[in-house]
Structure formats: structure tokens, C-alpha cells
Length: 205
Image 1: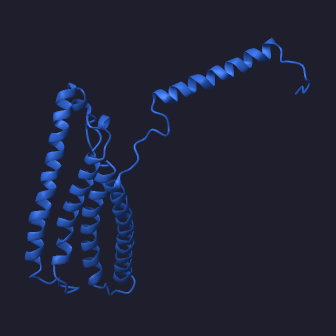
Image 2: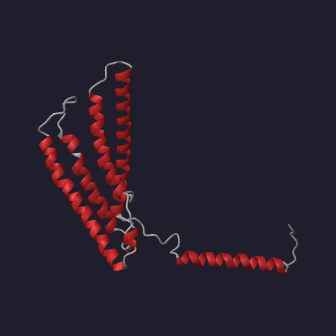
């Protein structure tokens, strides 16, 4: 590399000019796309939802660990010790209910549920937008049904005891109304604090 005090030649000047033009075009494209610093900051509700999701993920991980441990201990006791404990199957069954219901709320938070949008996205924009809000209304209605009837089912189940653990069935059934409330909470937070341009996109929930 030359370090003389002479000015750069025509070739070097053209290379520098091309680099400067490339940087200018890249900056213009970034500005047109909104830039890295133009993203909408999360609001208070979104921060609360993030905290709830964080602790739910930790709780789900713990439940899965206990569930797998119970199943492994049941298999070991049945085929090695010839004395399978009765409580392991019951704990695994109830944990499966909690993991399924709470996990569905977390998946809703991250838009992970299976959806087919090919036909919907082919509709005109006004119809897509109407269908978008109709879908949210159906999801909220289903969440309300889970909360209302799920809690009633939990109260009825509270009158019975489980065979092995001898705990009230209120606690396994309580996963239904809690998951419904979390689904409604996550959906409302996303709709309240979403960007205006996000609403017509039916694939986002």
C-alpha cells in the first residue's frame, strides 16, 4: 500500500466515489425502510406481557421436567422394580393438561398457531380487514367461554378427590379458565399496542 503524499489517481478517485455513492444509497434505503431506530418502542402493557410470558415459559419448562421425570420413574418402577407407583401417572396427566393450556396461550402471544392464509390474503383489503377483526372477536369469545365455563367446571370438580394424590379436581380444571384469561390478555395487548400498518395483515395475531 502506497503512503506517499501525492493525490490519488483517477482510478482511486473513481473507487472512492463509488464507495461513497454506495453508502449514500444504503443510507437512503435504510431511511426509506424506516431505519433501525424508527421501530415503535414497547409500551407498558407489552412489557407486562413480556414479564408474564417469561415466567410462564419458566413454569412450563419446570412442568415438562417434572412430567418427564414422573414418566421415567413410572417405567422404571414397573419394569425394573415390579412396583409402579400410582401417583406418577396422575401427576403426569394433570401436568399435561396444564402444559397444553398454558402453552397455547404462550403460542398465541408469539403467533405460533397453525394458520392457512392463502385464500384470505387473496381477498380485497377491506374484506381482509373485516375478517381480521372478526377473527379476533371469535378468539376473544372462545377465551371468554374457557374462563366462564372452565371456572364453573373447576368448582364442580372441587367436590371430588383424585384417586392417587387425593387432591381436589379443582386444581387440574383450573388450567382451563387461567389459560382463557391469558389468551384474552395477550391478544388484547397485541391489538392495543400494535403498529397501525400491522392491522390489515391477517397472518399476524
